[in-house]
Image (cartoon, rainbow, N blue to C red; front, side, top):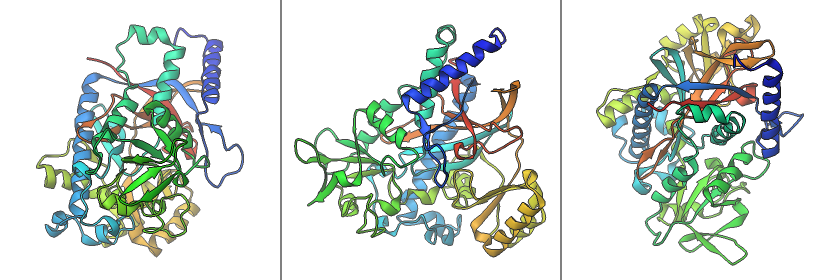
Amino acid sequence: MRAMPAELRQMKQAEAEALFRRIGITFAVYGEGGDPDRLIPFDMFPRVFTGAEWARLERGIKQRARALNAFLVDVYGRGEIVRAGRIPARLVYLNEAYEKAVVGFVPPRGVYSHIVGIDLVRTGPDQFYVLEDNCRTPSGVSYMLENREIMMRMFPAIFRENRIQPVERYPELLRRTLASVAPAKCDSAPTVAILTPGHYNSAYYEHSFLADLMGVELVEGQDLFVEGEFCYMRTTEGPKKLDVIYRRIDDAFLDPLCFRPDSALGVPGLMDVYRSGGITIASAPGAGVADDKAIYTYVPEMVRFYLGEEPILENVPTWQCAKDDDLKYVLENLGELVVKEVHGSGGYGMLVGPKSTKDQIEAFRAKIEEDPSNYIAQPTLALSTCPTFVEQGIAPRHVDLRPYCLVGERIELVPGGLTRVALKEGSLVVNSSQGGGVKDTWVLAE
């Protein structure tokens, strides 16, 4: 970068944006006017991990994915962790993400969450914290793949001269993972499809992108129907039986006969087929109870309870506002904490105390006092920064990392993930919906 004149850098940045636009990598934000096909800002400065750093992260991510799936099998079964008093029953059984429709059902290979996106932040040379777990339908993997594709196009010499581990096997691993959890009644090579809400969804590009790379059909609810014990896909050659659905729609919309009766996105009768072993839904309905922000505080306990191991990756210290002592501390220290809604996502419904005005803090205080159980709080971490191109040149900006862990017959992840960057100076919010950008993530071979 030092050897690159400013004009060439600007030309490369424009080239990257043109490639993103031509390929169609866009991101819509609900409830906003303006460009529905706006680009996520892409920064050419990659984030780099050594092989040793990655090896530790990989072990920790796999450990956490195993524990989260063990927890899901348990709480939809005997509930041993609740009986043992390790986690309060109300947090599980009264959780809005807990789906009674799958109680007593164990999905193929005991896997509820097949794609686990674990958001990590770095706070020191050897210190990583898990910010949150995503056990339902973590998005962003298309950006991980396209960031690498674009970097390789623009800087082929760098990839020839350095041992940067590849990420392009992800679609192949994803397809293999999905095929490995085919249901009991599948008696031939599994037929896999991706179920999308349609082209108005903010992640529709990713749905179509992954379907294309995996060589599977991209379907909407209206393309499917249930007959007898199976779910079929309408094709020009007649109905074709489906074995595995990688769904990218929320639980509530999957089956109008089981969940929301007004859903036009799902498939009537799908849950009956699922529970009878006629189809696998990835990730399983009800998986969201494991990534609730109140449940998050108990994941280290899950690792100890189910695996008999100490957690490799630490949680961020967290106060639960549902607890009187925690609530008192949070209300007294709002100006120093990050407060999040238990069910919030995308950087919405949160307060970053040190970056907020007195009025914003007081308004948030009223929300917390009205419904304390809806909030958790965490310290404002000294997040690591990464060199980033900004208008003034090169400057540090805060980053996080979302690796994608695939859970099926085996647990696998590609060496890398989605690095999100907060482009506003001093900002700690990296979400694309809040003005964040993306970077390529390099893991160097040992």
